[in-house]
Length: 223
View 1 (cartoon, rainbow, N blue to C red):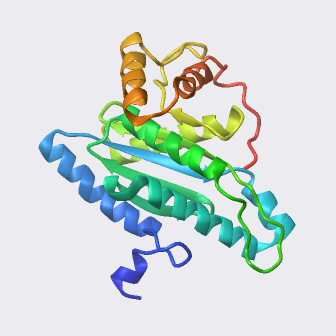
View 2: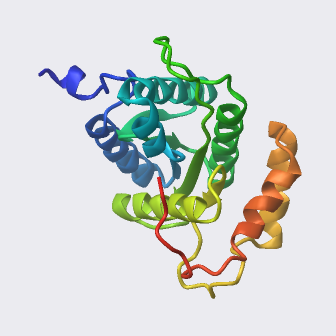
């Protein structure tokens, strides 16, 4: 297998996990040299196992392709998208702040939610799906590639555990479990970005309220 093939996911045409890791390493080195920043966003299809179990892998594959197409359309040239594994995607956003990444993932979530039902073209029932997301950024959430990925993954888990079909931002792990991670300044910046990006302020309020939940009273989360 040549490098180009190894760097691409056969099902979606997006970067493969290996392709993402190579690009992530390159971008991390660049932002360190330039003292810049970047954001990472994880997107996971909600309750995907139930789709596969009920309708089969052919329908599941079509759902993955359709969600990949939606992510590609929203992200455009703003970043690099990879199928990270199974029904999970990762988005690398160079030179984007965490708040900007949050709004982009929230737009993806909304577009997937309102998308036409997904069908496999072979007579299987059409499927409506939703996605959950998690966002973290360098350098605000960590100084290493591994730490940023871990923080984004934890934010995704929090989105899953607090109801799904939402996007959560990485929070400061040393904070009290019932303390919101948003400061007034951050909320003002988010509100300004929401106005510029055309995202409703209710979206921002929901994200802020998510962090008022007790962090460690979480049961197993179904994908």
